[in-house]
Image (cartoon, rainbow, N blue to C red; front, side):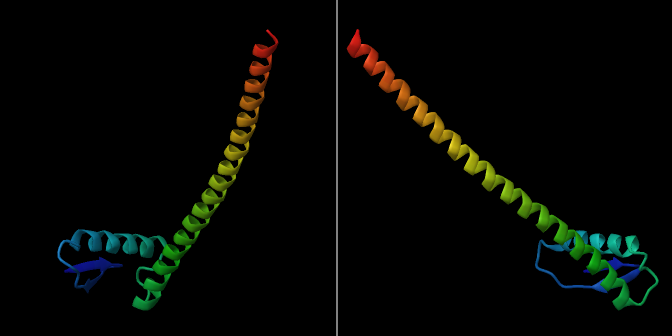
Length: 104
């Protein structure tokens, strides 16, 4: 199969059923090469620019994912704290109800 990046055609082999996925990856790389203004550059330079843009996106996504994971951990700790407080309040209410029953 062939993909086109920056106006250049590349022949690739891939597993059966992966052709559409590989074409989509090729389109993504082509979009990055165009966005970087690298079309018309030497082949290695064009691919380097596209790879740098993709690596930058991966870096940003990884940082966002890590930030979201930290927020989720903080939220879980807050929920645990609140659950403990609710359990304490429930125990106090049960004790007060039992005391009221005995005094009645």
